[in-house]
Image 1: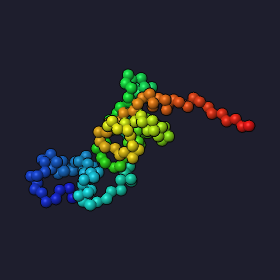
Image 2: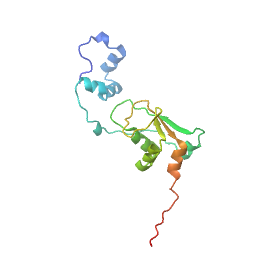
Image 3: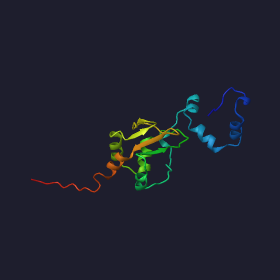
Image 4: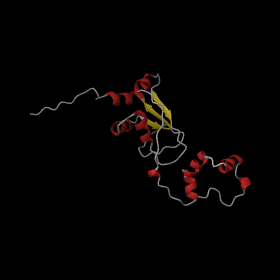
Length: 153
C-alpha cells in the first residue's frame, strides 16, 4: 500500500519518517487500519475478520454502584478503526446480555458524547460512554431474584 505519493521527503515530518524507517509497529498498525489510507489506495479491507481482544480493568458492579455519581462513565481507547461496535464493548465490560443492553438502550440510559447510543455506532478512539446507574441497577437486579410460576386452569 502506498502511504505517500509524489511528495518530497522534506514534506514528511521527521518523526514519522524516522518511525517508518525503523519499521515502527505501532505506526504501521495505524496506517493499516486507517480508513483514509485505504481510500487513497482504493483498497478494501475485510474488517470483520480482524481478531481482537477487549482489555479493561474489571470492576465489580458493587464498586461501580457505590460511587457517588449518578452516571457510570468511561472512555474507550482504540487507536484502530475496524468496525467494532460500542455495544459490543459495553456488553463485554459490564458483562451484560444483549437483552439487558437492549433494555438500557430502550430506556435511554446509555449515551456516547452526550447523545443516546445507537446500536450501530462504531468505536472511535476517545469515545466517552455514560450510563445512568439507577437504570442499570434496576435492569440488572430487577427480576434476578424473581421466579415466574405458571398456573394452569
